[in-house]
Image (spheres, rainbow, N blue to C red):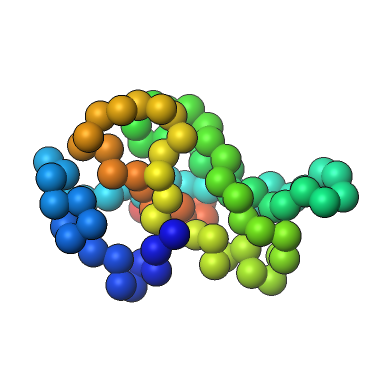
Length: 93
């Protein structure tokens, strides 16, 4: 994970053909069983259009620390795909 304020995609991904990283709107999913963690559910991946899940820890007070840049889980191996920023659906552009 990267801190959105200090992460520079042009430095981290100099070969990216776009130089920008898309947002992925997410919603928080609560654990359904003891011992499970919260997850951020990507509503629609900007690359494949499907849903993906990313871990958000086990402390509700800290789930927002798991937002920010993440790698897509769609398995698409195109070098131009540089992940996305997890953004709560009510704050997505």
